Length: 217
Ligand code: B16
Ligand code: MG
Image 1: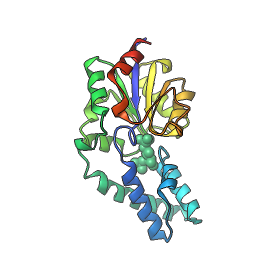
Image 2: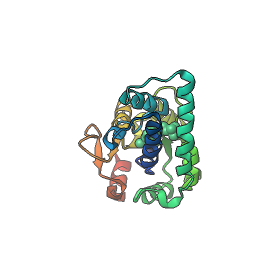
Image 3: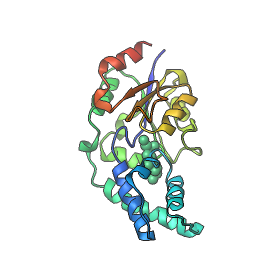
Image 4: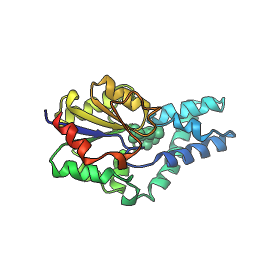
C-alpha cells in the first residue's frame, strides 16, 4: 500500500491568492467596478477563464471574446509581475518539513494545480526539481471539482487513487479528491473544508507523526 502525495499549489505551498486578488482587482477597477476580499474567496482553485466570468458577473458586465482574452492576458501579465518577486521564502511555513520528509522516505509526490503558471512558480521557489510529477492547468480539460487533475497525477505517480493523499485549500479541490476516492486533507478553514477526511488550519499543524500514520494505513 505504497502511499503517494499530491499537493495543490496556491493556498497550500504558496500564497499566490494575494497576487491573484491584486491583479483581478486592478482589472475590475480598470473596467469601472470593484469586488471584495470575501468574493475573492470564490476564485480559489477556479481556472483563469472561469474566474474572469465570475468577476464580470459581479460587475454586471459582458465582454466580446477578443476583449475577454485581452483582459485575461493583461491580468496574467500583471499577476506574473508579482510572481517574479517570489523566492524560497514564499514557501508557506511547515511545507518544506513535510516535503523533505517525503524525500527522505522516498515517497513519491506530485503537484495538482489549476494554475497555468504552476511550473514557473515552482521554479521561483526552488521546488520544481523535487516533484516527481507536475499536473497543472495546461494538462487538464476539466476543472476541480472534476477529479481529472488528481487522477492524472496518480497515474504519473503510478499510484492507485485509494493510496493518494491530497492536500487542498479549496472546497472544489477537496470535492475533486473525494470523488477520486483519495484521502483528502483540508488546509485552511475547516468550516469551509468540512468535507475533507482530515483538517488542518495550515501546514505548521501537519506533524510528521500524522504523515507516518497515513503511511501505515
Ligand atoms: P492561473 P491552485 C489556482 O491555483 C488558484 O487558486 C486560482 O485562484 C487561479 O485562478 C487558478 O489557479 C488559475 O491560475 O491564472 O495561474 O492559470 O489553487 O489550483 O493551485
Ligand atoms: Mg489552492
